[in-house]
Length: 94
Image (cartoon, rainbow, N blue to C red; front, side):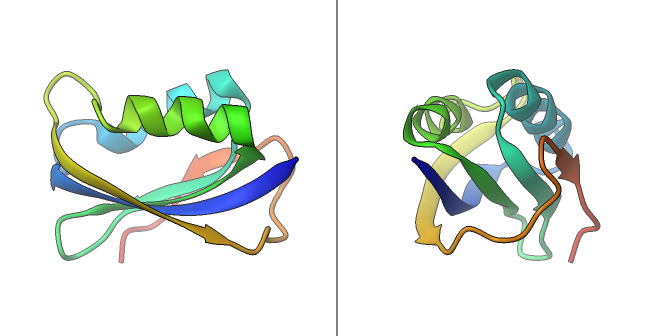
């Protein structure tokens, strides 16, 4: 079943290639959505996929890329949005 999650990743996650790393991983797993930096230093992502796909990505997000130091991954189930199918992208930071 397809569902959507909003993630907020805290720690040393900006300036370490986190968004590019997540882009590559999400595309590999088959997740749709987007990722961006936000002004408070967190990474914010919207993920759409199956329960198995989302669990797989969240597990990896807790580790992050080599230079990241992830302190916490907060997730929240949200309504499945209208997004481009088969697309995961980096969007503008806020």
